[in-house]
Length: 176
Image 1 (tube, rainbow, N blue to C red):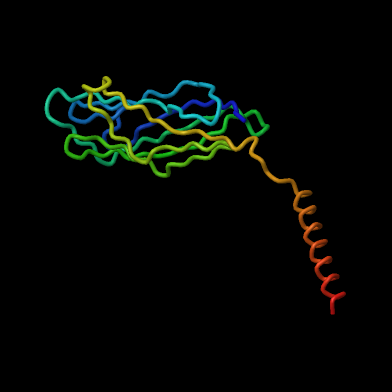
Image 2 (image 1 turned 180 degrees about the vertical axis):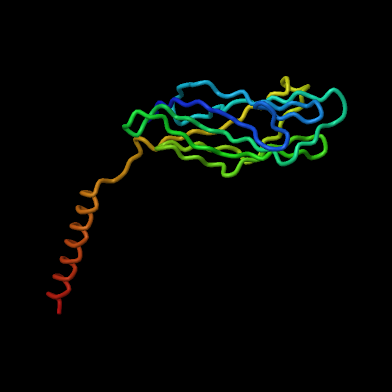
């Protein structure tokens, strides 16, 4: 059973290279393009936004100690109060040679009945590939509508088991 989920994201960079919402180092710029509000049917794969890398004029920029805090804001479904629910996940950006790496921990975010599963590691693409844009993807699964046995089923099962045990006991006693 599909569940309709409405969400959007907000990414904020912090660290020694953070300047006005971006990361800037030796002329290289890393920015976050947030995911605007979108409604999807769960389960599905989703985008949480894009990280854009702009190259330096020359040389290689080295990023260290910088983080991206990604907030997922879920406006539907609500827990009955009509308020938007939100959770954060933090990723660390590191440079290894000429490669930029974004690692998230934890990779599982639960908001209400929805579970968002991110990859743990995103290699940010080079500026000459896809215009430097790396999409942060996740899978979305909703637990709404999951089959949960009612307590009465357990009672019926227990009654049946007691009946079987009673019949076994009665049959055994008659044979003795």
